Image (cartoon, rainbow, N blue to C red; front, side, top):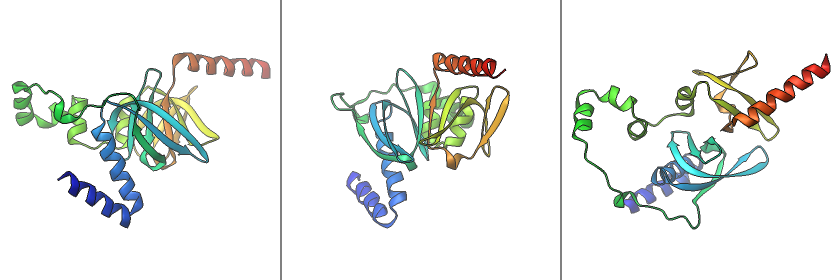
Length: 205
């Protein structure tokens, strides 16, 4: 079965490189969920590297986390992804699962409500898009890259037809197709930005 999956993916890759790449990346990240990976990607002409634990595998993006930040990377900018050298990996076949009879009953009788309240279940039954995932991170401060020299800082306000962020009372709408990379902002960085903005404003007056 695994051989057939690989053959199908290769067949798709030959006929549609973009679609084949997306399927390959999605399959890789799903197999490494909650494990350490390294991701190489490009923003404009610049090459970037991130290492972290696979947190969410969406239809068009992957979210990874580390001790410093949470990042969202669209598949469209990813060049390659690998397991981190020297860190053991664990096959799903060797993981232990506890049978939860109460959960089974809830899934049978209240499927939608039960799944929507548990992120790990939601990821198994639904493939989130970047748009739907960001909607669950309202009020989170982020940096958003459009190109190597163009980025925006702001707090996620909404994620409907466009991503809306706010900064200093001003709102900005962003097309999801323009987003190349997103990372959360630490409070120290946010404080430094606010201080510089205040200092520049005082200097101008």
